[in-house]
Structure formats: structure tokens, C-alpha cells
Amino acid sequence: MKVFCASQVFSPRVAAGMKCMSRLSAVAPDECTIDPKASQTAELLLFFDKLFDSVNGHDVRPQVGKELRSAITSKSQHIQFWDAAIDILRSMYFKSPNSNQKSAPPSLKNWIFSLRGLKCIWKRLQEDGFKYLLPRRLNQDPLENFFRCIRSHGVRNTNPTCNFFVSSFKSLLINNFLLPHSAGSNC
Image (cartoon, helix red, strand yellow):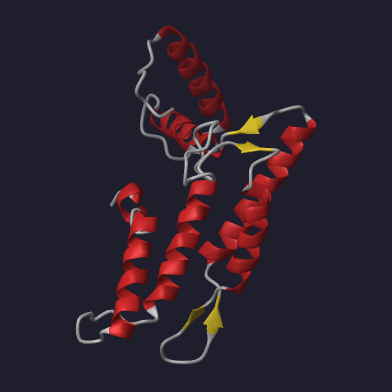
């Protein structure tokens, strides 16, 4: 499944629909079958929509209604939102259906770790004179593709030695300087 399709659930439209249906169920319970508590789920969807937007900025200028889906700047709301988001993520937990045991899954802990890391990166870049940072550009696709190329160079080698790694790296480096690159590729 593509992340893009799954993440569409975390949208203002879905959240607004859930809120509207939950309010209608309180007024006319026979007309609507959604639980009034669904408004809390709608708030969660809006929170994660903003969180995804804040780490997926790809344009210097913010879009109307999607201010966090833009570059991190000294005037943007990213840092303030991330501080609040870290507090919210810390308070989240999953409750086991069979017991009252509460646990925070690694995904929530890793979100906190990632947001703290982005704050540190931005602070350092500001000290070095950067005016903005496009968080969408911070991904590991090029690194994964690089190691995939090293492992598949020559023969299928999932555990290369140091010598094989160095010779494969040199060969790939020279070959990539000589070959044309695809304009539409992601790396």
C-alpha cells in the first residue's frame, strides 16, 4: 500500500465529516449512526495531518490553510507546533483490550525523537546562516539506493567486504558520472 493513499485519511475533509456526523448523531440519533465520541477521533486526525504537513514541507511559500506544509523559517510556526506536538505525543498511549495495561509504541517515541532531531538540525542551520529548510528533502532514499547498488554490483553480495565495498563504490561513482540521469527519479 502506498503511504500517500493511507495518509489521505488524515485530512481536514475526513475530520470535518466525522465532526459533522458526530454532532448530527447527538441531535438526531436515528438519522446518523456515528458515535458522538467520533469528534475526538476527528481531532486526532487533524493533529496528525498537521504533524505530517510539518515534516513534509516542499515549498518555500506556505499554502493557504496548510501553513505547516512549507519550509521551516525563523518566522514559521514549526518549532512552536513541534513543542506542542511532543507534549501531545508523550501523553498518548495504547491500552490493551484485555487489561488496563498502557504502553507507548515505538512509533510515538520515534516521532518525538524525529521532531527533536529536526529542531536541532534547524537550530544548527540557522547558526550557519541558512534562511530556510525544506523538511521533505530530509529522507533516506538516496542512501538506501546507494547501498542497494553496492550490494547488487557485479554479483549479488548482501554482505560485502571492505575491499569489495571500496571497489564497487569507485566503479559506481565513475559510471554514474558518465551516464545520463533520469529527470523524474526521486534520487
